[in-house]
Each structure stands twice: as structure tokens, then as C-alpha cells.
Amino acid sequence: MNLSGDLVSLIVPTYNAARCWKALQAGISIQRVRPNQVIILDSSSTDGTDLLALEAGFQLIRIEQCDFDHGATRQLGADYSGNARILIYLTQDAVPSNAESFSELLKVFRDPRIGAAFGRQLPRREAGAIEAHARIFNYPETSLIRSLDSRDQLGFKSIFFSNSFAAYRREALLAVGGFPSNAIFGEDTIVTARMHLLGWKTAYVAEACVHHSHNYSIAEEFRRYFDIGALHSRERWLVEEFGNAKGEGIRFVRSEMAFLLRRDRLRVPVALARTIAKYLGYKIGSHERRLTARIKRNLGQNRQYWNARRKIEADVHTSSIGSVN
Image (cartoon, rainbow, N blue to C red; front, side, top):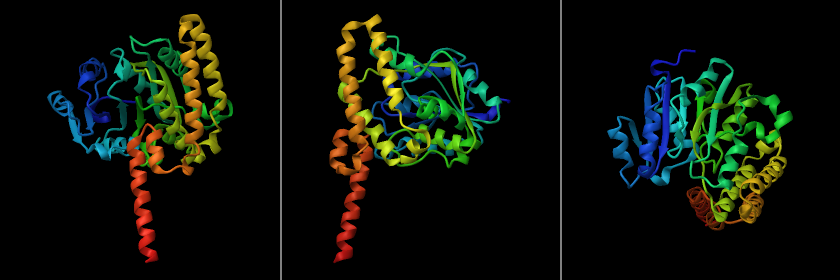
């Protein structure tokens, strides 16, 4: 596959990214395979991110902060990417670790049945033991090609994917209808599942690396897993087709405990508290339909999503009153 010319676009959603811009731009600039086009999708930053993007010579698309949507915004980038055959996505805090990050990720598209690929995420250099383990567990050293058949062995893990550093074949993305709009979370998981069901393969490329990890608080873990539970509730077909992630969760906890006992025993109580928060968040999120939009906004991480749902509920209620009158 020829990767030169205008075949590759890089798409980066941003919001107040000035604090990490220097590292992000440097990581992009050192790549041996340079994208023909870099598109910055900025959600009305107030810290000058838009000006930094323009100074770097990148294409800037401004959207209102209230209009940001994990899937729809990324699809907007795809729509603006012209004739690019491969679309690379980065988040603003994912920094390529070396000059070969893009080229290694793109190599797998020589296989015409690969619809999407994601790279390995290494923990930040300042990451603590809990933060580091999450990346070590989810992003191993060995690459893997997955397809629909992989669900027999991997279950829900077969559609694990991350848009923090990923690439999509435009043809495959269009074949599944693009990124979903109005998905609270996991637009990458939804696309991966749809690709597998249509016969496409996806790849995890361990040789393509970025530094990207988060030191979530216990409350943040609860909110994240509330949203994951809500995703599985609203996209029930994911669980029906690929199974639930219960077994993987148990395996993660066992691995984390063993890792901390070797590296940082004092963090074990914190890790256990985080595990409880994740479990409670997921369980409550999976029953989100019983809760009001106001409550969900206070419990979830993606508050903007719940704000939109609250408005929809209010509009439906007003419409119902009008029809009765």
C-alpha cells in the first residue's frame, strides 16, 4: 500500500490544549511518515489552542463546546479529510513516543481486510503504579489481529479499541455508517463491533506507541464506569453479540493486585476502593433508564451528553402536554 501523498489525514479533537500543545506538536513533527493534512477540531478553547493550531500550519475547524460529541465530532473530521484513504486519530494528550509511531500503525493496512488499527499506549513518565498497570494490562507488548471469530476466545475484549491513537480505513468506516452520533462513550468500540460483524478485521499494533495515561480519582473512576454501564445499556446489542466484560474485569483486578504487591503495596487499599467505585458506577449506569437526566448528569462523566438528554426529555414532556391540550 502506498502511504505517500494525500492518502493520510491526522485528526485531533482539542479543548484547551495549550498546556500539552508543545509535546503534541513535537510528537507530530518528528514522524517519518507525515500526514498530508492535520485537522484540529477545536471545541471553542479559551486558552489560545486555536491560534497555536493555525501557527503550526494545521487546518482548524472550530465548533461550539456544547456541540462536541465523541462520535459526531470525529466524523466531522473524517468528512473534512478530503480524499484521504487512511484517517489517523489522536487525542490532545496522546504523544507519539518516537518517529515511527505513525508508520508502524499504518503498516497493517497493507492487508486489505484491515478496517481499523490502534496503537500501544505507554504510561506517562510520571505515572504511579496504579496508572501504569492499567496501561500495561490493556496494551501488551504483542500485536494482535482480530475478527468476528475472535469473540469465541476473547469475548467483549475482542472489540476493545481506543481512539486516543488509532487509524481507520475510510472505506471500512463508511461501510459501517461512520462514527455514531449521540453515543455517550465508546464510539470506537461501536465502530469496531460493526466492522467485525461486516467481515472486516481490526488490529492492535504494539510497535506503534504513544505516551498516554490518566491518574483518575476514585470519583472519576465511578463517573467513567457509570458512562460505560450506560453505553452497554443503550447499545445492548454489543453485549448480546460479544458477551459482557465481567471475566476481563476479574482478570484485571487479580493482575493489578499482583502488580501492586510487587511494586507499591501501600497503594493496594486505594486500588480496592477504585475497584468498588468502578463496579458501583457500572452497575448503576447499566440501569440508567430508571434515573432522571438530572441525576445522570450528576453521576456521569459526560455531563454534556446528559444535558442533551435532559433537554430532549423536557421537549418530549412539553410536546406531550401540548398534544393533550
